[in-house]
Length: 165
Length: 279
Image 1 (cartoon, one colour):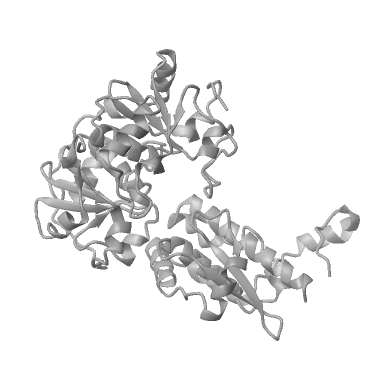
Image 2: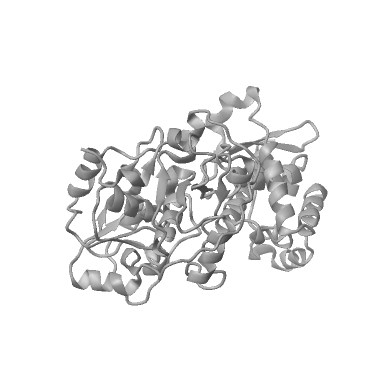
């Protein structure tokens, strides 16, 4: 199917649709709720734990590294790709250097929350879904902008996998 | 030829040999503040350029009293030798050092090569966060001779005195309002302060291990662009972190007596109504 921005051509139904806020994929919602309830210190500890358990790029994907999507909004070289599973769910893989633990930690929120989701679900995640987590008390605004950039690129990857199915 | 003030620089080996030295406090200051909790040099404490060193409300640094409180909590006395190191070629290490100098702390040093070199040498990192007994610390009146405000920059322009823009070439030329990969710290206008010469900060360090280039290389680099020892110089970047590294190089490695860091930098100038800009 082709991806089309919602435009005025369907304006009545598009407006109705916009009113119905799509629920977040359940795993992502769980993470958002969890982090929203944490203190600043707990948020930092969670990001550190995510960063430290950040999985290396699987061996079999190492040669794909050059084909991976670079995320220019990020302050560190962030590469990502997704694989489609037989059930249509996506598994995202990231390559982020260990020198950037904050970026790794934030990418983990997205990977853990969205792995297994179908492309159609990934693309409906609103860009401001992270607000309830109040991340800005733990990380700087520049990191959050990078985080939004990563989500935008995950959506792009998801769109590409919809088109090639 | 050696650096003009080699006492402001120590190598990783020196730090490794002074981990237990009670007259020394090692401070990690990073761009990514999660690096410290994941692993730091034994005994080192952390300052974060934003959450530790900035005023909580205004766009400014801590007040003198707030700075005294921070130094006291870190177990630093007026006589402590403070050694700074960090990620990204010591940008924020230099920034923290600059602020310590601003409040009159004399005995400061940078660990040449920073975290990158320490890790390359496979030296140990620990997770234990040390705590030190609170001290009584007495800061000096802010030293405005090393900090430029926007009015100083206007005077610099009137007096046709040298300005050094240490941002990336594309920020200088005005193709970007921000540093590549840092889109959020932008300005409404792109370009550079008129008459500023472009000497990107990275030209002062060796890419391989983040150490500073040799005195000969540094002198050739800055003098080649007419930034000379007798000049009254202001360096700037985007928020003042990269230019504090250049400030350190000019002031201590090359010994230029009159160098200021303009921490308002492009995020102030590029948003300032009526300020002249060149592309």
